[in-house]
Length: 519
Image (tube, rainbow, N blue to C red; front, side, top):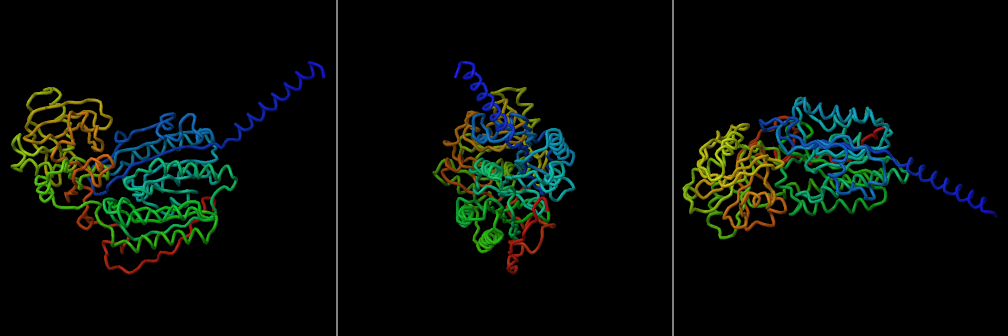
């Protein structure tokens, strides 16, 4: 064989390799990514608009998900087309204009960049939109009209979301968190993506069967934490079911207690290729949930605010954390209810600088912040804060004290001000912000570990605060996410419902088989 022949064969081989590489690249599935994420209370007077949402587009979306790193396996398994991911801190009802703005952008990008083999849809499930009972169901129905019924959609959700038959029908695969607090949030999203890719690459396509069961139980997250029983054992039953032949995934949603619509209830789903096993898995989880409904208790001891403060002052454990639960912005509260802070300001224990040290995090007060910035650190200030949105329980509070710290640039609060009032450090923010991390305090020159009392607008403690606590009580305070559900006054949920109808008869927990998206 002469040199020319060798060169010709080598060139042919390279051409074939190049052709195969191109074919392999061309054959990668084309998958869209979109997200709409908010938990919004219908019992809060607050409104969530476009400015309430952090909006990610393009590579920003990849950067949000750790499993979509440039060199990650999942990133290389498909041609991903990120559209829009809009996420807000929980709050009030979303304005219809805001919702339509986001939906329109997602739909337009799907139209322009389609067709798609599949889609990863990341939603919370507890949004409330003006004039709508099922926003997530509406969103996916409209998406389906654009992408068609051949496109496979995998939906990931928060376990505090709500799940309707419409959402299940248009989701070919659907799953949710299995931990509360949500330490498995990214793991769940990765599972949703992995399940999607597995069905595409194996050629099995859409699961053949989907089961949905509403469980007439509506309880707050503070009573259904998976850290304690019965939630811990209940959610531990899910994973073994997914190892059974014919079942791909199963999920339990607690539902969103501070939404008043027909869809607000606990729900169970399962899906896979065996009708019998899918139905059996769903029914097993639904019955398991129903059987333990009366065993759910608050994740920590609860008490009135007065009882909580007396216990904290008496305790020698630092920090003694008190949850100001009724206005928890991470559950949908307005975050600016002043009732608790007003009560603190009345108490003689905190009026003098030498009293028990207490950090209050936090109260929004844009005008207070503006005045503090003009005065500067070290100056004395007297101004009002809070109750701009929710003044039903108490009006704005007057804070008189020394400005100890002003910090700009926080991604949630924008500007934070620490004012020393008696023995209390009160954090006032330009925009409401939940305080979850030790750095949230230390960035302001505060040491929560050495404070006698730390009071946060939160329900159950996120891991960092939970691990920091010396002791902890959850205070039954008023607000848009009041833990006393009976007191809130739901009018539109389906009845009977536990605990509203505590002695109701056993419900029908048989599996409802939901049609496939192309049926």
